Image (cartoon, rainbow, N blue to C red):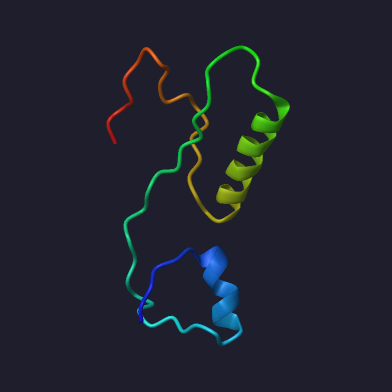
Length: 80
């Protein structure tokens, strides 16, 4: 069968010969990933480290990172 997955997971399997990349010229539309957590003055260190580490990981893969606040609970999300 044919499936869709993330390169981070699939590239090692392709390198081992367990999977084959059959449509190399086909790409799906990029999508957004959001980190959502309560807005207050104290954000636990674990949450801050996770968000920062995840953003670094995505940036290392070539993702565009916008670290500005998109909205607050009293605002509506910006149009995409």
